[in-house]
Length: 211
Length: 211
DNA sequence: TACAAAAGTGCAATGAGTCAACTAATGTAC
DNA sequence: GTACATTAGTTGACTCATTGCACTTTTGTA
Image (cartoon, rainbow over all chains, first blue to last red; front, top):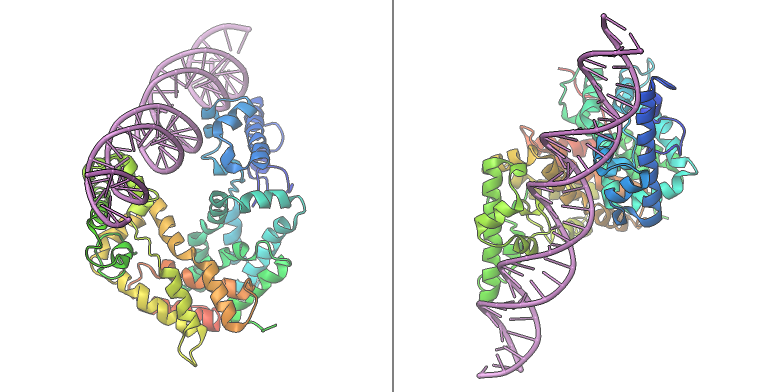
């Protein structure tokens, strides 16, 4: 999730990491062009569906050339998502700078609840979620946004225990935690879903209660 | 894992599911063409690297047209992997028809050990693994081969307990189990790695011993 | 032998993404 | 303010994967 398009106001990667408000006309114009492209893209995607929109269509709608689109976004999928520069850093910090006495697992639980739940439960998220869900390409991309940081998180967890950077248990934990959003997505009660899965990781899998 | 090219003799999807040996000249010729394409592809990929080989190159090497390549394989990545029709069925059966008294988790552990370990430890696997590891596109594809069956496995697990087909704990277990090969890949002792991760799933995550 | 199915071919097209050479606006140093 | 270096954006040509279509050839079958 984490779209390019002010749905949620928090975490607009580029916008917020920009030396806030007007660091030169050039930067501003560049940001404006970028935003125009992203907006045109989302509008068209929502109207016609991801596959029914070509880069050409988007470029025309934003009144730029197709090559300009690729100067701002590395690929078609990236038109939909915000590339958050700092996600990895925040993830690592959540483990490394956890409160004294707090377990790594608890720190990660808190971090997931605090950073992911707001998006999942944001009301305007609905149509955006529908778009992503109905496009395998976008679903895969959204997942990679998280799983990309598996190695970094695994290393952070290993460091927290003085284990090898490539310790298997730490790698497994990192991966499993980063997939929790994908697993909890779309559940009636996302917060409870996150807790349930963390409980599995903390205490082991138990057979579910039969209704 | 699971290549198109007799590295491991077991589980050659198409080959083994063919009404063994000569079900008509037609079938045999088709299979031969298919094999010629797959072999040419692997040879070229290993020689030059995945990205340095075009479909055109492969078609030329196998002396067919590029369109014929796509008649046999749905895409470039599929030239490297065997599409095993029955993987999902075997996975579901491992849970549904487990030995009496055996837990679902143990049944899955057995299944993973029996079906995946042979590949991982097969000697000729080495250069093949190097090719896959060094090509993000192929790594992602290899992973999808397993995770594709997440839904089916989740449903099978849920059925085993009379839970809802979309029970969250079952979905999580399915997903986590199917990712074990990806996590255990390349470890010195793959068998021990699989056991370690199953232990995490069974009893919960514990901080690793500090060396 | 005649006919239908299916394997393979050739060709043209679409759409993503890259590259190189160019223009024009902007920032910076003087 | 003028001169120079950057850099956003443009254009157009290119590669490559993938699809569709119309056509030929081979093979299984009635």
